Length: 385
Image 1 (spheres, rainbow, N blue to C red):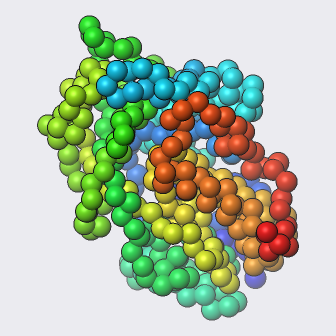
Image 2: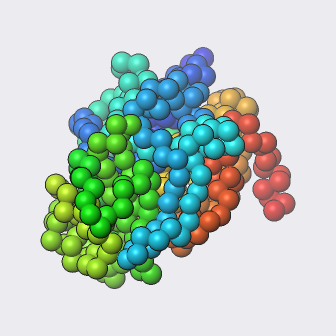
Image 3: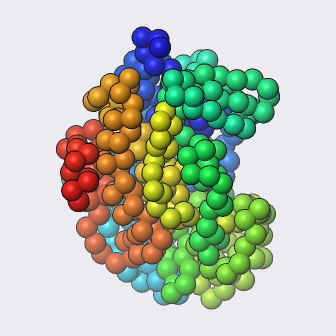
């Protein structure tokens, strides 16, 4: 084995890229394998809470992301028809003072680009679709569809809800359709007209059975994003996403507040995505293989914490590898799961129930968390619990 064990990260999404950046910061020998041929600025926004910004601070991109994103003063929840405020959660300077970092909304592609730029040339290999993984005990062999193979001492599965690493650990099993579709669109901020409310920097519109979350994705407030949660009983899992239309949106949100109608009228392109989940897994690792993010706890986006959990996972995994030594990987993996399963499971459950910040509540347990300083639970503590 080399001086620094060879660590392979499968997947260069937000979780995989941030994990690789943190591993490199700690001097680990890392390579990332991504099946996509390249990344582009696709139409999606993302919340980046203080719990994530603390990780980005360690990576070194906090200031750059802060300069790009929008800094909402509040998270508003509003009634779908009247526009009345149901909840007003302070963010802005309050978040910096009380949670230790800013709360941002930003374009997902801009965030991802900063993470990728934090990785040195040669660390990420694109077009690497993994077909098979062999843990031979003393080494892991990765087999890719282009006919190449790679060896690693540790393999981190950051390869999403249909993870091949998860399949190797637990066998093939389709994720569960969560019963909801999410419509997504990014478009120029429209003009505020009579009968409308000013566009909140961060707002979730709620009815009894569906919602629309909308926020700015740039600091200039010139670009808006919305994502919905709409119940649809049956869905073919082969159709992960499809094109939608302005007409479909108008029908889906008929009778909603004029501000919502203005958002739909301004829509340029909109897609619809099936929301997928899995039950909590019986294990997160085995041998030299370990999972993070959607590979082990996919969740609805209804808390805006899915990517955050993947990024926190990666940070905790790196912390545990550093704590006990990468050569002691099985102990590190056990320590990692002991310190992540409860929090990720809680976020997964609240996301499923779709209750987050619908009414005024204290989000400090989520936003105030610091993955680097939260006291480590030892493995015995987890067994005792």
